[in-house]
Amino acid sequence: QVQLVESGGGLVQPGGSLRLSCAASGRMFSRYRMGWFRQAPGKEREFVARINPSESTDYADSVKGRFTISRDNAKNTVYLQMNSLEPEDTAVYYCAADVDLVGRYSSTSTYEYWGQGTQVTVSS
Image (tube, rainbow, N blue to C red; front, side):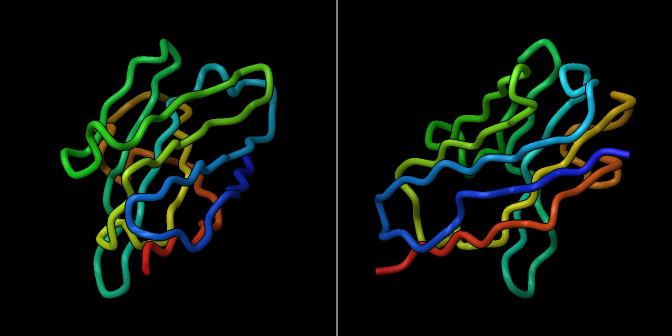
């Protein structure tokens, strides 16, 4: 069982920045593929970014060049640095862990464990 706890969400003006954190339980964190997803009201949950145990990364086209995913295995934590935020980035952001490294990284069904989510609101 892996528990994930997100933090760092909030209200920010367009063009601003936020850094989300996701702390994971357990001793096998360095072996997990970690992902960030988001869900806006009335929309399906969508892929944002992922980072492999090797630290290779991928991003949704909508956030490429603005968001950066990283991990600190010593702290069992994955981060999402979000810059140049736009109102369209408003959503609940979820951290997810894939422990068996099977499946498409952008699919929600690939990830076995999920956090509770943190709200990000981009508005003036």
